[in-house]
Image 1 (cartoon, rainbow, N blue to C red):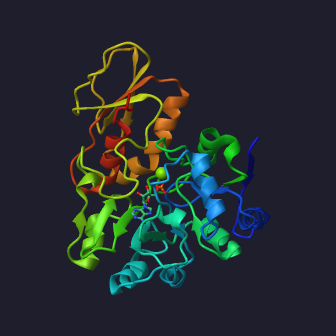
Image 2: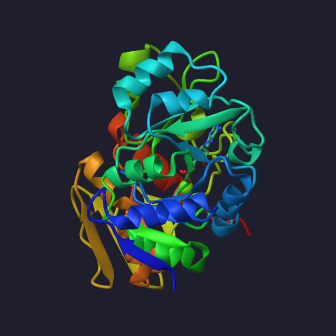
Length: 328
Ligand code: AMP
Ligand code: MG
């Protein structure tokens, strides 16, 4: 059985125990404000290799380093532009990851052999306390098997990774529920690689122009960013996206139909689920809902396409990737 410890405050002894495991090269799953992360000492290549093994993550997909603030982040880069200072002041600690040219200190496995490193200072008090207790950056991708649903509860980590983790710190449900916004500052212009809780408009307000990598919103774009696989975040059930209000969900197997704002009439055999027309609330709940539907044994989840508009970009991105069919 994987060990699971509840953390009730930032001076809970569980945090020191977790820090000792990380210092010794072990793996600890911990809560952040986005989703649960699978943490290892980010400067220890053997420890980071254990993350890849536990997740079944391809070596081509780099991991984010979590730090205690801008000074630690800067020390891991070879170039730290003025924009990075401004962004860190405005959005850290928080759900924004910055991609910058890496310093020589960053192990190749963290970068997936690329020239850049992704950095974030998380806002969750348990994540912060853990990083401080270890005194080193923590590599921490989402604590789930590669391509599967991200965990928003400690129980999701236990069921997805099982024995592969030395300790899970349980800090309750995560607040944002979606992975961080990733902004690439290593090129000529700032570019969003993954939409997330920090909205493009908020970034543009600070930076002026921000490009959006088209793969972040459009299907079928070639992989311009490392690790941005088409199929991702997928539940076990087959997820299909349909036009709003269609109620289209015929066929065999237990089916759930998920609508936004209004539930159309459905046959008795289909379980209807109504989500609010509130992008932030849906983001918080989305992965937990898909986990629940998987656990309840639904074979198909038919979901209405979420609304247009920038506020829904991160939810649309996750659902689009989650609905890409498994390669045969
Ligand atoms: P996860 O923490 O599981 O949400 O995954 C982290 C994601 O961050 C990866 O899938 C990559 O797409 C992205 N990432 C990490 N490092 C880099 C990097 N150096 N350059 C671009 N993207 C990165
Ligand atoms: Mg992930």
